[in-house]
Every structure is written in C-alpha cells, then in structure tokens.
Image (cartoon, rainbow, N blue to C red; front, side, top):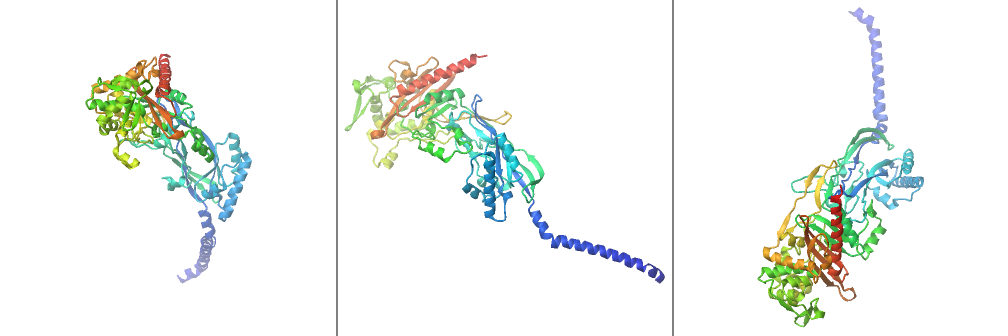
Length: 614
C-alpha cells in the first residue's frame, strides 16, 4: 500500500496544484468582477431600465342625429423630448443641453419656438413625462426631425391626433372643446414611466361626455382606455430592446346627439348678427333638435390650446361669445309668461269668457303700468282669449291682484321656474319670484305693484331660453314637464348601439284639459288672426300657436328691450316647441316671430325635399 502511495504521490500533488491554481484564478476573477469592478457594473445596470410608455386612446366622435360629424380626430405628427434621457451631470447643464437642443430643432425645421424657457424649467420637475416641442409636423419636417434623433438624446417623433371641429362656430356652445390633460393630475400617472396624455374635455359635451355615468350602465365615454408598450432604455437614452411591442388602447365611444344638423345650421344662420338664443324641442320627448347661442366662437382656435391673446379677445368681446345664452343667460320673460299666468287664473275659478275693461293702463297707488294699447286708449272689453291674442296687460294685472302671488307662483313653479331643467350641460336655474327674495335683496316687503309686474313677466323673475322652450313643450303635450336632453345614443367604434336615451318626465303642470285648451286657443289666435301679435310667424308648413314677449331691462343709457317668441305646433305627427330670444330688440312680434317663420319654412322644405329624393 505504501509503495502504491509513493508511486502516485507526484501525480496527486500535481493534480492538486492544478485544482488549486484553477480555484485561485476563479476566486481572483470573481473578486475583480464583484469587488473591484462591481460599482462600474452596478452603475451600468442602474442606467439601463424598463420604461412603460403610455399610448393614448383615440377619442370618440360627436355626431348629430343624422350623422353629421361635429367633432373628430385628425392624425398629427409631433416631436417630443424625454428629459429623463437628456440628463447631464447637473441640473444647470441639463437645462443648457435642452435649450441648445431646442434651438437646433427649431432652426432645422425653420419654425419659431413653440415652447418657452419657463415651460422647460417647469417641465423639468416632471420626471418621466414627455415634453411636446413641435406640433402637427408635415412630412418634410418629420424627415428632418428623424435625422436629428441620432444626435439629440431623448428626441422622438410620436404619431398622435388633434381634435378637429369641421364646422368651427356652429354648435360651439354644445360641443365644447378639449385641451391636453395635465399628466401630474392624471389618475393613472403612476402606472407609466413615459406619460403621453389624452385630450381632456373642458367645456360643453366634450367635458360632459368625457366619461359616462348612465343609470345602471358602465360605458366608456368619449375618452377611451390607454394602451402601453414596454421598452428597455440604455444609459445613453436609446431603446435597446422592445419587450412588449404594444398593448393597443381601446378607443372612446361615439356620442350621437339629438341635434338635427340642418335645423342647427338654419337656426345659426337666422341668428347671425344678433345677440340671443334659439331652442327647438321635440315636445313629446324633450329631445333638443336645435340649440343656438349667438354670437358664437370658433372651436378650432382651441386646438390644441388657445393662445392667451386670443382668449383675452374673446373675454373682452362686447358680445360675450363664450356665454351660452340658451342655458346660462337669465332674462325677464315679458309677456311669454302670460299663458302660464292665465292657467293660474283658470285653476282658481276665473271663467275664460269673463271680461275686463282695458283703459290702456292700470293704476296702483301713484304708479301706472301701461298696456301696449295705451296710445289708443285701451283694448276695451277683453276676455282671456283676447288678452293672450293682443297681450293685454290690464287683464293680467287685474286678475293677478285679486289672486295674489302665491297662486301664480304655484303654476310657475310647476312649470320649472327657479329650477334647472336637468340638461347635460351647465345651466342657470332662473328666478322664481318670492316675498323672501324681495326682502333679502330689496330690503323691503312684497308689494301689490310687484305682483302686477310678475303677471306681465317683469320685475323679480328670470328664466333661460331653455326653460321657456320646456314650459312651451308642456303646453303642447298636455302639461308634462320633460327633461331636455342632447344625448340620443352611444355607439362604439364599430357602430354598435350601447345605450339609448329615454324620455324622462320631471313634473306636471296641474290643470284641467279644458283650462289648458282655453289657453292654447288664445295662443292659436296670437299667430293665426290678423290682429295677433305673432302673426308674422305664419308659414305654409306648420300651424303654430304662440306668444310674443317684450321685457324692458337696464337703467338710463343702458335701458333696452329683450324680445321673445315661444310657439308650438304639430307637423306630420310630431309636436315641436320653440323659443327665440333676441337682446336689444323692439317687439317680439317684429323680430322673433319672422325668425320662426323662416326657420320652419326652410327646415320643413328641406326635410320634405329630402324625403321625396330617391
């Protein structure tokens, strides 16, 4: 055994030396990689990272009921800088590098700077958020920018979309506009390394339908669900590897409105050059067929973002184009309130055939309230029908003083005065007259003179044109106060109907069918007799019943008249109700009634002609 050991000793020693040398080399290499050069490797690893890039979803379209596009998307090629990939050894050097890069970019494509130095500094506090530096580039500009990406770290061209409003100012108050969402305020900001924001609705239906909360339905609105891609970025800011090419975003849904495009276009043309509003409703469903506020503004000025100078011009415009007069303008109703006041008389025992002697004025204390007939010495004998036909103030005031405010207020409240209609857009509630309001604002008690003014639509009472259209529709449909709506249905990007709006009854004017018919008879005489104040609304298509109105407002040099016309009628089995208001007018019968005549003549001619066309 000893001889065998001695014989193989040299081999064992030699083999041991080889193993020892191998382990020594391995340990030495591990020490060099992990200890001596470890910090360098850790630095390299730390400077390579996975980025989750947010991909915005295409925004849904807004269309009229006859599928005319009011808002859509157009492709846009935009240049972005990713400040994360442009970082230098200090914040000052990073800012300088970004400034030099921007100068190079704008000089290369021959554009004036689109961002300011202040915006750059603000954006540097938003790590991981891309910064748009050039918008809506043409193909030649795209090619030049792509060449620069080899020399400018963090520069990228991204295909996006711009919101486009093909008709500019038509239906601008309805549609509204968008602006890029602030990434720092976005709900899903923390889910992404690079955040490319969606456009966000900030006005009109763009805002109201950004997301939808329909009863019992969870449906995407105009804003879709974003997608994403995963990439690995090296320490120089270049993509080394695409880990996930793209999880595609889900597009927003399309919103189809109740608006009839031809009706909207005609009403807009008829209201051009005026300050006022026009509202047309389906009196049986509450669907808004046309809603115009004049003057208007061009929505495309807000794409992608309106300049401060242009926005200031809109704010300083004396016509106040940004005000949605149809929903947010509050006006004294004048004589268009008289059908409702007459209903309150009938509800409380007044016979429609009983008459009042109109002398042309009513004296209350030392004050006189004139009737429109004051120059002629009055209307003489006036019953309810004639009072509506000729808009007699004396008739209204005499009965109102006997009846009192509270009983008149009952009908006004049932008709929606002092309450928002519930339409999808921001609106004002108007003003329902009350003794409490008088005490609070005028610091005095309610007087008989106040009741007299209310009975003719003056004094402490205000409504919006939409409220006027809603109560007019109620007179047409038997007393139902309908919730007006602009939404007809929601469709996905393939055209599948996901949701349909239903008619909603908010309340009812408590009256008898006989009393309602008496008021409707008087309103029919307004339009369809030679002495009716609204006779200029007569047309060859629809037989209307209506009421004119004139309200004097303001003081001194600013005193002026706002004029109204409300009407309803049936055409081919459908009931329609309309309200027109014009500021700084003369008389409702002279200004507003002809607008209604032209509107229905042109609209129904178009509809009939289209139906006959094969």
